[in-house]
Length: 242
Figure 1 (cartoon, helix red, strand yellow):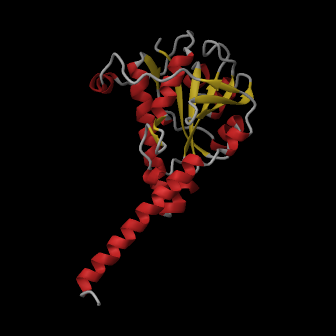
Figure 2: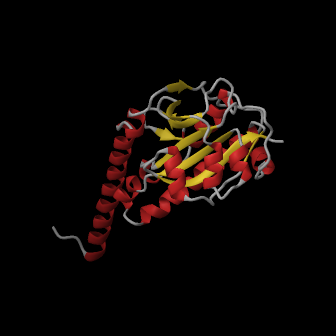
Figure 3: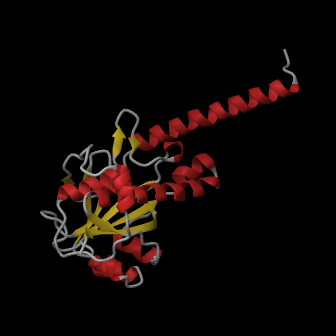
């Protein structure tokens, strides 16, 4: 039996929407289960303390107190503080589905976070470039050594990038999202990076730390420093407020 034109159009639209939904779930599952090529090649792993699910500052207060901070004290961060900020940015919040702390179009999760730790930047953590693994809530060593000066130069000599104890670099694999949504997926990736960045801001504020969103840098230089294949989108210096 042939549907009348209106009902036929609605049926086609419903089938298309359902197909997109199933595809997004399938791709999300693949992205969740597939091991990262970067993780498979790392040389050392540091497990992070379990993240706290409650804190002393409300979301409302964190929003009210959030500011861009560019001056940091020389006091190092704790491994727990660093882990808490990383979890808030990309940590797993529902292991059965692989859902993360920031929303992602179709659960494609194109975002990867690299961590640049300067000498003495984090208690008990050697200086180097690390990759955050949200599945194990761990850091994987990519490069040994203090690259804070190099990163500062790559960021147009912004002193807060050079002097912060830690810098978080948000990078993206656009193909993970565009393979599902086409060119519009590019927009979704940038939106997701914004979600991640705001989480970093609010968690840092709640912990009494300071950060600032940095978008001015030479992409190729940053990629060379952190040895990544993804495209860097943001640098977030992180430290104690001066």
